[in-house]
Image 1 (cartoon, rainbow, N blue to C red):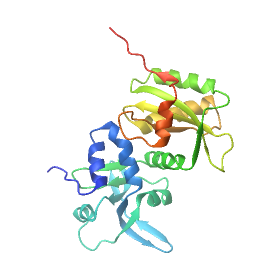
Image 2 (tube, helix red, strand yellow; image 1 turned 90 degrees about the vertical axis):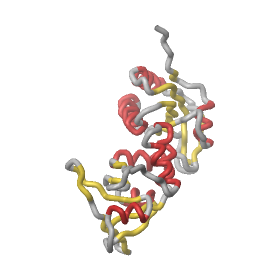
Image 3 (cartoon, helix red, strand yellow; image 1 turned 180 degrees about the horizontal axis):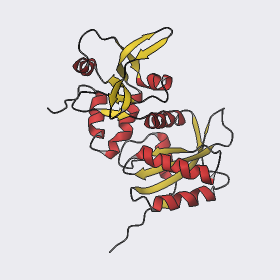
Image 4 (cartoon, one colour; image 1 turned 30 degrees about the vertical axis):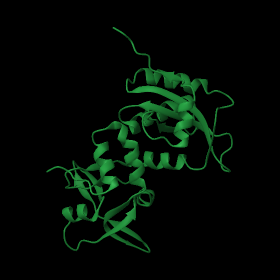
Length: 232
């Protein structure tokens, strides 16, 4: 039976299941959406049910009451909560969206952490070019990107949270296909070697899609890396 979306989050989830370029929008909508959670929530905390899959345990969450009812009919306790707040209060936990449905998705702790970091990094930012170009970081990233065919281009800016940070830290804008959270983790690993102790942000850029002001600014900066097409 085909999955029939009944809200905007489910439509985004369906698009993201087949289109790499649709995944950033799905993550954005997910954080801003209210989910149905199996369990109980009160003044002193919350208790969330778990399900097992392939030897791992996940907290089940649902994109609508009907999806939840299809998995756990009856009087099983449940509550609604904004996904961002749920993930913030359960850091390190794994989730599964719509278990038992025709379309489901697991969310590993690293994936959730990546989503939250991206959301935080785009609020109240001052964006500029670095006073001192981070040559060591750029060189190390170019070596990485050359071995990753999914990366088409990369842009660099420095960002600082207004009234909080000093000189700011590097933000890498990626024009890429594929598993963006995985690519971001590889960039973080390279950055730890090249610039120990420095925070690095990674933002996915889709030149053909809707862009927020931060993404537009990054795309306006000349790329420090651009894949060269080779003719046979």
